[in-house]
Length: 196
Image 1: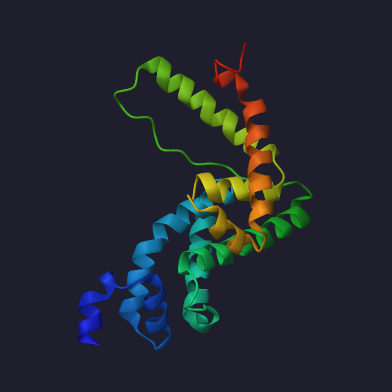
Image 2: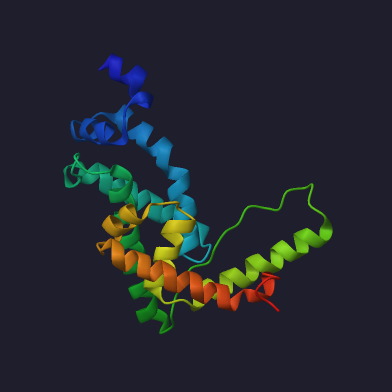
C-alpha cells in the first residue's frame, strides 16, 4: 500500500477506481485532485453560474464514487463515465427546476477574464461576444446545449459524448451541427465575413 501511496499520481483513472473499490483513500484523493476543479466549472456552466449549487453537485458526484465504485466498469473510459454521471445529475436538476419554477432552464457559461494586454476595445468586444453567446446558448434546447457544451467546453470527443449521453455518434454529430449552425446565425454580427 505504501508503494501505491507514493505513486498514485502515475496511475490511470481506471486503475485508481479499482483501488477505490478496495477502499484505498489515497486513490480517491488523487482522483479528486484530478477532477474536482474541472467538475466544478462544468457544473457552474450547466447550472447558471450557481457556485454554491455547483459545489454541492461536485460533492454529490464524488459521494457517488465513494458509495458505489463498483458501478464503474474498469474496461471503459473513466472520464466518459464520470461526465455521463454528471450529465445525468444536471438533467435531473433541470427537471426539478422546471417543476418548481415552470420555466426552461439553460446553460450559463463562465469565461476566463480577458488578458490584461488586450486593448480596451478588444475587451469590450469580447465581453459583448461572451454575453451574446450565453444568451444564445440559453435559447438552445437542452440536448443541443448539452452536446455543444461537452464538445467545446469540456473538450470531449464525439465518441466520448456518444457514450456519456447514450446516443449514437451520428446523433451527436447531428446535434453539434445544428447547435453550431444556430449559434453562428445568432452571433453573425461578431463575424465580419458573415455580416455583409
